[in-house]
Length: 265
Picture 1 (cartoon, rainbow, N blue to C red):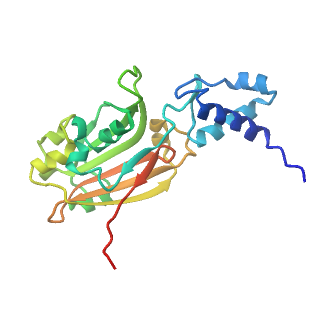
Picture 2: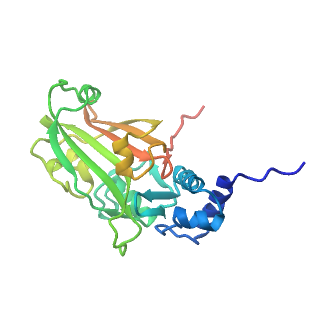
C-alpha cells in the first residue's frame, strides 16, 4: 500500500523543524515571512500561518506581531533539580542570588536582571491560609519576570523563562532585606535564615494548565501552549510556612528532576 504523503502544513513544518534543529536557523534567527514562505512553497497564506502555529506550539518559534517569526532563543531544557536546588551551597553557587540563577549558570546561560515588583498587599485566600494570616491582612509580595540570556556577551535583554510570585508574612520579613530589590547572595531564603526562620521543609505541587492572556504575553508564548504551575510552600523546623511561591513555566522549556532515598526492605 502506498504511503500517504504528509499534508502541506506537516511537510513544511517538518522541513523548518529540521533546519532549526540542524542549526541552519540558529536560536534567535529570523525565519522566512509568511509571504516568502507562501511564494517559495506555492501554498496559501493561511497554510503558512498554520505552519508557524505548529512550530510555536512545539516551542521552536516565537512570532512578534508586525515583526515576523523567529527561532526561539533557547531550544534546550532547563532542569529544575527539585531535590538539591534549595540547599544553601547550591543556591549561592558562584555567587548566585538564588536557585534559579545557579541553574542557569550550570547550563552556560546567564541570569538577566529584571525589576522585581515589591509590594505589601492582600494575598489570595489560599496563600493567606497557608501563611497563617487573616485573609484581609497584607503580606509581602515579590513578583518577577525571570529572564535568561545565552552568554555574558549577549547584548540582548534576554528571554522570559518563568514568572515567579513569592509571598511572605510581614511579621517575619517586614523591614528586612527581603524588601530590597537585591536580597543578597543566596536570595531571600538565606535572608530568612539570617532572621531566624531557616527553611527546613519544602512542599511543592505541580499542575499543567493553559496560561492566562497576561501570562502568555509575559512569557511570549501562544495562549494555546501549556504551562506548569508550581506552588511552593516552605516551612521552618517548627512547621511555620514562611514562604509561598507560585511559578508559571512553559512546558517546552522546563523539566523537573527529583531524587529520593528509600528505606531498605
